[in-house]
Length: 323
Image 1 (cartoon, rainbow, N blue to C red):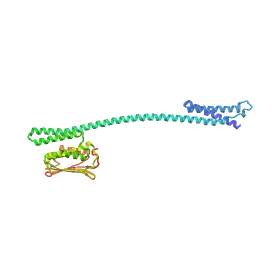
Image 2: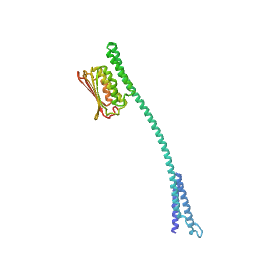
Image 3: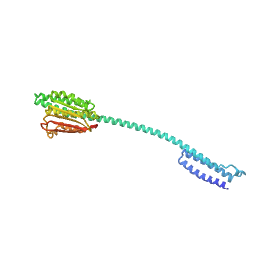
Image 4: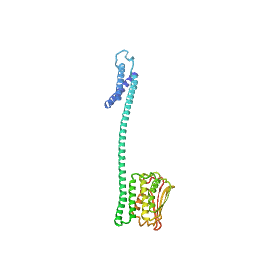
């Protein structure tokens, strides 16, 4: 009796479970749900067969026949194994599809990044070219333009002052040469820039009967850009031009090199000197201070009337200049 009741309880529970599984399979007709529903149907059929033999069949040996109900657990385990296998296969396929989609998305993003990088590179090059053109135009306007205007005025008002005219022409040539040098730097470090500057200017100073005393040792600054070296050379040229034009000096002393934490350049003359406050707003000094600020150089000018002038340039060693 207990065995028969147990079979009936299993059959009733299996029927309710099959209904729930069937409802889920209808709502979500996946392969896993269908497999569980078929297994549940098979278990219900087995249970009904045993129920028939126990309670309904008229056969004399019906009660002694083999019961399949205990095998329901094996069918259930088999159904679970089928479900797990289907889920595993689905997970593998989903993982492969996800990897493919991820690779496609990564390739797309890489193409976008490369495109943006190319655009930024082109834009940076265009901005650099635009800035360089503007700087060259400014140098030509402030340098060549004003010098040619002054030279024209000098020729018109004092055509017999050949020395002054020669000086102004030399200034125009130097400025033009400096502008051309911006496209081809004269050196790749500060020491070379100074050496080539001395080579170009020393003969001119001798013609003007100005003695040059040169004491330059290697600088510690090694990583300035070409444009910064050019701007530095412009500063030196501006200083020497002012000495030649205004100081009436017979000697120029240049001392430069690395001094511990700082690099330094000192240019001193024995000319007639000037009052720095009286010429503070001049174009030459203004350009000197602007370039010194751009290059992060400390600029100081000391002078007294009758006692020459000293220009000191100092900056941190191993610095990047304006960069």
